[in-house]
Image (tube, rainbow, N blue to C red; front, side, top):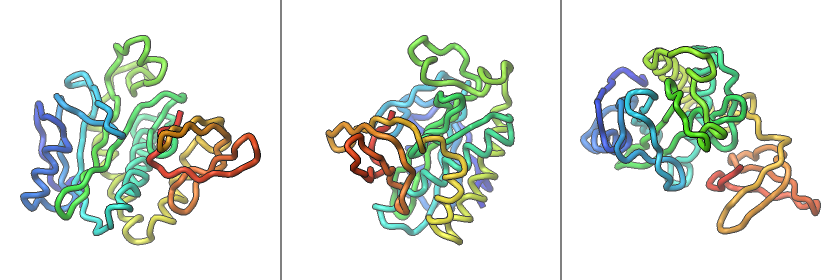
Length: 238
C-alpha cells in the first residue's frame, strides 16, 4: 500500500506541508512525498531540520490509522523500525534506535522523524542522511550519513525503496497486531537500555540509567536514589 503513489519535487517548504495539503484534498493512505530540498524543514519538538539540497532523503507519508491524537506518537516507533531495518538491509549499516525514535550508527544520528496531524490523517515525516559528507565539526560529533559510514556515494532511491517496503511491513504489523507487537520489534533494534541518560521533560532535568520502555513507549529510568521513573516519549534524551 505505501508508495503506490509518489510525488517528487525539487523544492518544497517541507515535505510534511505538501503531504498535509494532499491529505486534506483526499489523497489515499500510503501516498508519499519526496523532495530534494526543504526551505523550512521541521524536526521533533519544534526544532529546524537542515539538509543540504539534493544530498539526503526527505520523505513524508500519508497514513490514516484512525487513532486518537494522544496515540499518534506510536507511528514514530513504527517508522524508526522501518528506517533501522532499511539501513541494515540496503546498506549493511549497524543501525540502532535511540529512544524514542532517532536512528543512529556508531552512536551518531543518521535519521530523525516527526508525526503531525491533518484532517483524518497522520503525516509521517522522515529525514535520512544519505550523501551529506561535509558536516561541520560540531555536527560531525553528533551526526553521520550513509556515505560517510561506507566511504562512497549511495543511491538515495535504493534507500527510499527499502524504507517504503519496510514501512509497509511495520505499519501492517502495527495495524494487525497492535502497539504491543510493534514495541517487541522496536526493542530488538534499540540501544538505549542500560545506558546513562539525561532527559529534559516538562522543564525538569532527569538523570539515571535507562531500564527499558513500558507498554506505552515511555522510557523507564532508574534514578541514583533508587527511584524508578517513567518518562513519556515527548522528553528530550541525550
